[in-house]
Image 1 (tube, rainbow, N blue to C red):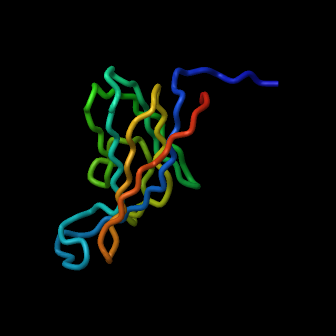
Image 2: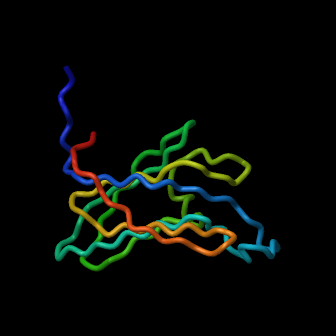
Image 3: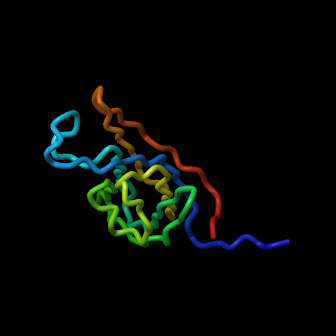
Length: 132
């Protein structure tokens, strides 16, 4: 039986991430905006918190990007900065998968979905455990 690997990342957030590239000359509904999903991470703790994030879809999983947030600092993942991930994005410009975040402590994680009818924001609850 394999033993669990303790990595120090005790909280995991898995967020459905859906985005499509929209040309700047397209006028409705996302004028000059390439974002359909935006994930914001806020460190409400009074100490820095190390976290890592990766993208996953049915065809590929990116390596983790490791970072840390100082108290009250914010990290944001949206279409405009997905190029920071080592991930084989389809030529269609469409990504339909998950953003997985693992952290040492609980963080505020919010996702905003932009739709034709406006936007919807939700707070994401983390689940505790140990991941390798």
